[in-house]
Length: 298
Image: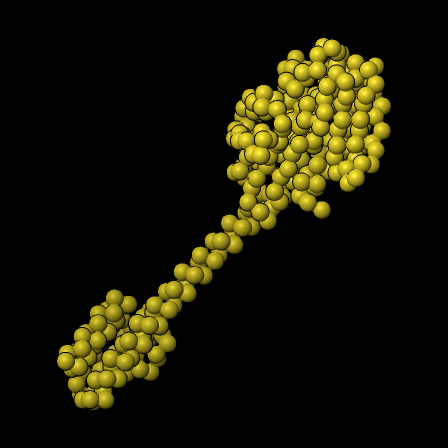
């Protein structure tokens, strides 16, 4: 099951409590239907829950009975009777004789609560959203530029900031940032889906933080190991040629400890002196040893 299907199934569980919101949600679905004209209304979906939801919306909002029919992979609700279409047009303030219906009548969205319901209907018919495992992306597609622009204006009123583009002749509103996707899902009635996206984002950020820390620690360990190997090679070179006497007396303890504990970090090795010395102090001694070895080689 895709994440879009999961989201739409959650949206279909939102109770239809207020008549104004029921009509607004039905209106959103109708405007983004396959066909919405004075001669025919046709809504298509592959999601059985959405088909049942739209059937209930049409019945409750307009008193229209539309039975879903299986057409290929999709379930389709089709209305062709003039009387049924007339009931819908009258309720939405459209002229029964005018087939140009793809514009948003703001008067239908009479209360603030109606706008989330309207956007829910829009998403049920024309929306998709990427799952938590993918990059954040939610989009709504329409074949009608004026309707796309009016829906965008409505979203802006709700402090949502979608972007708009044209793809293969279709007009698309989309969000590509996680907070906007989460806000849209929460607004329209899918808080569980929004929470799933938020949890996935937190988990991903935590995993990235751990990986960065591990990489940093690994790099530091490799750097320290390489430095220790160079120090030991320098010491061994001097010992092979001249013996321990080639080192000043104040450096001989450092030479012996470095050879005895080749895998120690500077901090660990500094604690083995009696009394212990500081890490900068040890670093200074080892630098003198490597410089001495360089002079001996030349």
